[in-house]
Amino acid sequence: MRPLGIFGGTFDPVHYGHLRTAFELLQALDLGEVRFIPAGQPPHRGAPSCGARHRLAMVRAAIADQPGFTVDDREVRSEEPSWTVTTLRAIRAEAPERPLCLIIGMDAFRGFTQWREWREIPTLAHLVIARRPGTSDPGPGDLRGLLEERAAAGALDLHAIPGGRILVHEGTPLEISSTALREMILAGRDPRYLLPDPVRAYIRDTGCYVPQPTR
Ligand code: ATP
Image (tube, rainbow, N blue to C red; front, side, top):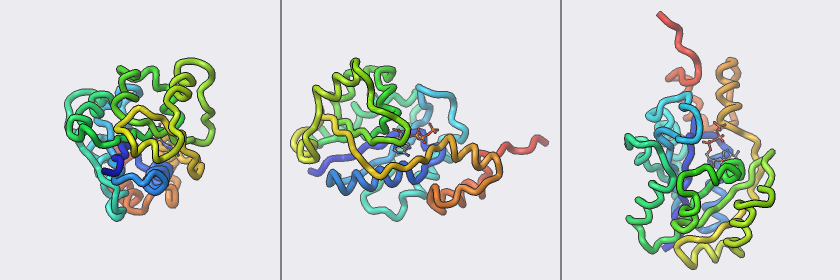
């Protein structure tokens, strides 16, 4: 069974930095699927600007025409904060033998030791770390140690066992962030070509990211 890519995030909103990263990994690692899992209540940051229902709808709109991309709404449906370790345990229980590849950007990896039960996470899945412009590799310490201990030689390593390896992926560097997009939209500028047209249309139609006038 080809590995399952798991791509969690706030996706507030989803953009081409996410989508291109997922697409390159689908191909480069010969993944069977990349599953986008929007966080309901992300525990490591402030409340998202846009509600979970909207963020989920934008991810659905963004991936609709890409075979192999799927969306999983379990974290949005849950009443609990979106702990990655909880989600991974649930997916592992559903697919005990399947290689799982948790996809995260280097910026997220640098904060990894703040995640709940972070030492457990690489035992449940492989980690695939996407480089991100402006974020360097971690310096000496726990994370550097983890990278060295668990380094995968290549994609084949990720197919061979269900989890436990770490691969740093050199993709196309795209300096796009949801924060910059929110600021752009708030300032009345058009985010076109930084995110898919259906997402742009959704934002325009719903007024997400633009403060609603008080009546
Ligand atoms: P924000 O600016 O609101 O923090 P973001 O653009 O970082 O948002 P998230 O939804 O927080 O987007 O990111 C989900 C995952 O995708 C994270 O692991 C993040 O590191 C990764 N990611 C986001 N943007 C990129 C990008 N341009 N290139 C590579 N990885 C990215």
